[in-house]
Length: 101
Image (cartoon, rainbow, N blue to C red):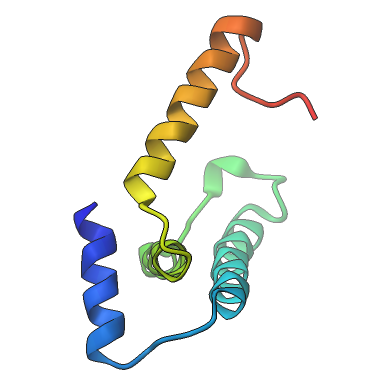
C-alpha cells in the first residue's frame, strides 16, 4: 500500500521510531478526536444529520493506523483484504457483516 510506504518513509525521515504499544495508544487518541467531532456536531447523536468531522482528524487517524501497521510489520493492504474476505463470508453466511459478539 503506497500510503503505508509513505508513512514509513516519513517516520524514518523524522526519526519517529516508537514502540507498537505507543502507536496503538496514539491511534486510540486520534480516533477519540473523531468521536469528539461526531459527538459535538450531532449533540451526542441526537442530530446525526449534522455530522461534521474535520478531515484533518481523519488524516491523523489514518496516519496513526498506518504507523501501527508499520511498527508491527503488518502489510496494511493485506490486512484490509483479509478483513474484506472475512466480512464477505459473514454476509454470505448470516446476511450481516458483524461478528455477532
